[in-house]
Image (tube, rainbow, N blue to C red; front, side):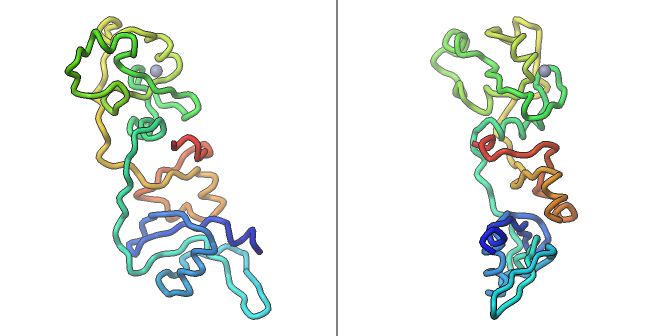
Length: 197
Ligand SMILES: [Zn+2]
């Protein structure tokens, strides 16, 4: 039974918008506390001598209709999501595994190019973009002006990113697909937690 208790449950707010993923254990406690209702059930049942409970795969928090704000930290995964997994230079989309992060102004050119009064830091939303392996390699230590390359828009901190990133395969398997609209990005490949940090 322990295995079942630590399976994942998709958590919706009162407006049916996905806001989190929790464990079956937490979902059942929230249902018993009457702050959540089951929306979709898996085929599993938890049985003990005194109780038999269907296992939810999706629950909704009935009195909560906000979307919690997620702090958008500067990391490789979030930069790739800001750029929609699209190379800033050749403008083609790639799977995460084929993408890298490029510093627009490379480390070796930073001091000379930016002087002491740069408006942003070397590691910043403004100086980092998603690039495919080929473009990143081709760019090397050069500046965009030296290559005649340009960006479609100046990179900046994104105002918003979806809260949940779930592989399509997992969403299908868990019975979540019908609930994955706003606030969820369905990924074509499994999302490794290590990519997000
Ligand atoms: Zn490219």
